[in-house]
Length: 457
Image 1 (cartoon, one colour):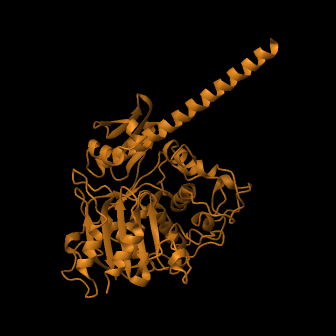
Image 2: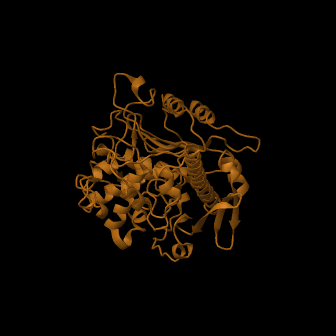
Image 3: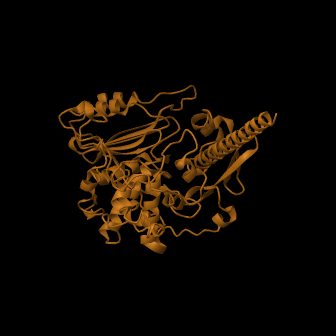
């Protein structure tokens, strides 16, 4: 009898802990779903000037996001998301800096933060020639087959009953520095700001390069992270952060609660969350794509620029290259989420790609170090697939076997900034091309690039 009671007690205890685990898991997942959805709706309403119904139907209608309900609070420019009244999360909008998720921070405290941002230059962009402005030439280069190019672009736009694009929102093609084609889904145009997601990582890399040029950072030196002093992480270099070879125990996974979802949607200080991670591998020995590394870099940039941090990206990069639409969004600590949260027009993403195409130079000013682009497209030894550089993806370096490339029908020298859902800036120096594709879902971009390349005689 005693033995039966003991077994029964153990079973009850196990059942209790299993139930506790399931409840905790479900709650954590719900907070992520609500935070993500609230942020998406808030940005769509206040940055993109769309309706809640529109963004819910187009981007949040799939499970599990379809479980949540979202409420717009116009009096304080915020959106709350909740599932059956549980795990409520809020995203707030502030002019100039977009949306911020209120997670483990005090909303009142977040709203008292002050951001010193520079005024946008008063330039009549419609009267200024591309790429500094938006005036385009009347003729295309003779080597462009316009009919074929138009047909290629048309193929990546699919419409639903409401004439909204299911896949592609925008495509921009730049050839030899000239904007030769652009196409937008219904409801979008050249002035529409669109999320870049992990394109932000490549922006973060460029900002790092500017500070290297100014002598404020050294990619080969140990990363200036105070928490790592006198620990086994103190020898992690800035280059290893850029190349995603820090060895930190991080999971870039979004289909269930993970390090990534914890950092981006449940914590108010993304960099602090990432710096606390233990080592899974010796630094410099294993490639592991990590938004955590990018957010650590973002905080390093903040500390290197001091009081001018929030203005720094605009003054040193965006406004120098005509990228007037860009909005970098901060977390609750006030640090830009350098891994993920950025909005800009398709043309401005193309301008960023053009800066790299021109080896970091714009209007005869060397904005990036002269060797920065070359270093950017050089993978680390730890990257066995040879497909990542300084926060940019590469197409591999197997010149003799194209099928081994990531994009087999695209030249080996192609590299690209890539964001969730197929937000991409492709730079193909050998074909004189910069291609931007933005959308809600991933498409066969190898076919898109192959078609664009074939339209050049």
